[in-house]
Structure formats: structure tokens, C-alpha cells
Length: 78
Image (cartoon, rainbow, N blue to C red; front, side):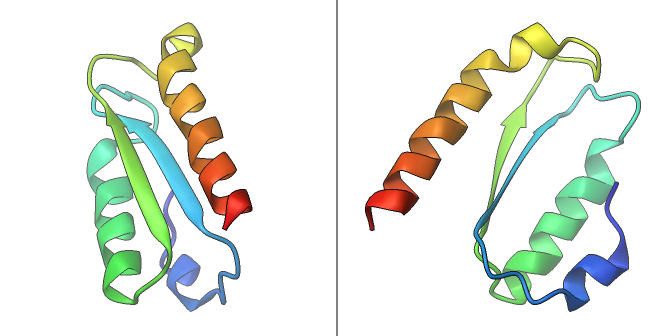
């Protein structure tokens, strides 16, 4: 869950957020707002948006997690 204190952290690592529009436990709006606020502060953050998965449909997050693995590989090769 996003918390305004996250904007005060000296993030030294890139962040990747994977979140579904259909998440019924952690609403999408506040997460997106936090990501946008972090981008405004020039944090190294990216977001992958998934559309039709609920919070508990973990098997549906395979493709975004595979994308996260590729994202990490690119970062580690820099």
C-alpha cells in the first residue's frame, strides 16, 4: 500500500511496480498516484499495468513477472 513516507526515502535502486486495475485489495488509483509522484521527484521507477486480474489471481501475473526478469537483466548489464 502506498504511503507518503515513500517519497522521503532515498531510493538507491530502481523500482518496478506491477499492479492490476482489478485489484480489489490494494486499489489501483493510489498506487498509480504514488508512482506518478515518484516520477515527478525523478525516482527511477516504472509501472506495468495489468488489466483484468484480481489480487488473488497470482497465476495471471506470470507474464508481467517475466517482463520484470527481463527488466532486471537490462539493469544488471548496464
